[in-house]
Length: 261
Ligand code: KIV
Image (cartoon, rainbow, N blue to C red; front, top):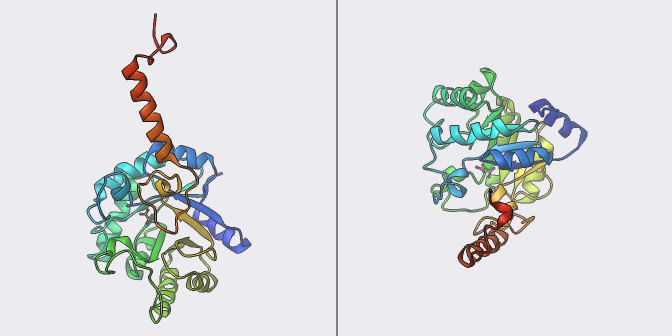
């Protein structure tokens, strides 16, 4: 069954949590979809984990098209959300709408996501019939303004974050990511909103959780404190590549089994 934004709204109403992962390619999209992950986010974290950039800032709209298309074509059930990269929505609501339309047309995504408190842009995109996911707290595209990778929403700024979340809901966002904020604040936001909250480094009180897949699979060279590693893919790949190298060097690969007569 195809997951739609309405499916996620119903899960929240019933008090049922759901799981989200990032994906940037066809193979992981197939696997995570088959595993029943409800939402696949084609995050602009692709800039870090696929393209090796130090931040997500250099990621372009055209690059997101390639990642987005690969994921949507491999996905049957999950709701696919494509991130709007830095520079594709900040100039005006018109620019935001034009970028969102391009994403929807060229990738076949089910929804887009944008960072920060931009209710006007969200409303403009939603009014055109495109579902929008918000993203508050630590917003990686603003890493320079936020003075690094820091927990947000502590002290006086907690009320602002709550109000920003309510404004996104009023503007028509169907869900909001809460990244690196205190768990208690995430719980407050979650109970104040009708739409689902999706936590990453925001404690267990959100309606859903999201992880960058290379963190969850232990492929990243460094993982943030909030990410749990469900396997050790980096070590496994390293061991496998070393075995392969040894077998090629010794001549024990390929054997007859891998050869044609
Ligand atoms: O780009 C991304 O992967 C994200 C998630 C961390 C929420 O925005």
